[in-house]
Length: 281
Length: 255
Image (cartoon, rainbow over all chains, first blue to last red; front, side):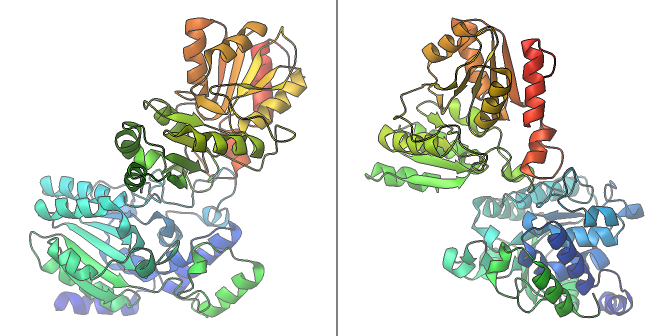
């Protein structure tokens, strides 16, 4: 409880990683780079802001530090939201944000492990979680205190390797690993229930041996306290946090409109989207 | 998906499996080998966006190893059309082949190399794109790089061929090209290991030794992000770089 109260205070007084500002950065990148995946980035903003603000530890603010926690973005197409947080940390420059997708730039449309701060090359879905399982197993065997967060999309759960990794994580009692599911209900080609229904996801993950909680993925306090609770319980079990989110969250005309998986901004929609974010952005 | 296609083929269907080349065939290579090729099933694998088409998305969506992987699997036919006319012929060939086919679709908006529909593809054939000087190297290109080959061949007055079929690749056609020119240059938006350049090297080293310059992706991933044209330049495969490299191979100073 003490821990939770301390973090609630932290949330109230800590103005880093304000979600509206992160979304503004995403819009700026998407507009200047004329690129897609805006809705996919918006659904994970609060998950990332809570992780970066309250949970991920990077010694000396060094994204390559040996003793760091790991954030594995398995749903690599949400990477613009992570770029926004990395920019806030000073790991990316204003020029890199403004020059998104310019010829010769380093920041790609999907997560690339060659960029410090991004742990895996993903975007081909279903890879990152298994890599996260391996990182966590390695850290556990070294008795390191570091934690591994692995952010997967609900559509990504169609991929077989996710479930193979889940079996391995439970079998080997990898309890420094937390899978966070961005359950926004959509994937590129339609609603997840239409494309390939996941059924009762929480029951599935519990039956695989995961300590599992479900939260509102846009409520930062709820996310924060659930992450603390998961680490505090279920010794010897991998953790799963199912975050119910809204694809396109933050800009009403994008919310739950799956066309924003692939739609590009024009000057009008860019201006409208920024206006919708309000003064905080 | 690929396993399911094998199942459908086993009960009489003719599945066409479509995906990005980074995934079909690369992600599913073991299913292709074991479930389809091993049993010689009539499944057509369509790999779209091959090469650097997804230039902004990075390594996961780029595909410069798919020809090498599929060529080395027994029973596979590998097709790589250069333009819409070759695409039509390749589709017809793939459907009539009644065996495992990988049809590679790369960058499709770089223009045509043929002026109209072409004759039905014959197994392993090279298609001549233009005549040129026989005292200089000839160019053999596949996929979208055939456009580049044609432009450079016109600039330097070289002979040029398109290779819409990479496996089988007919030894007679390749040796004929080698015998009427002085050296060969291969061009592909694919690794120089195991693709067109590899296939031509395999043939000529055995049947008709000659100088060979393989132009393609060196043994590395793309470094940066940018347009398709940018990535071609990064890999030395834009028109100017190819012109320079071919000129050097010809022993010519730059025009």
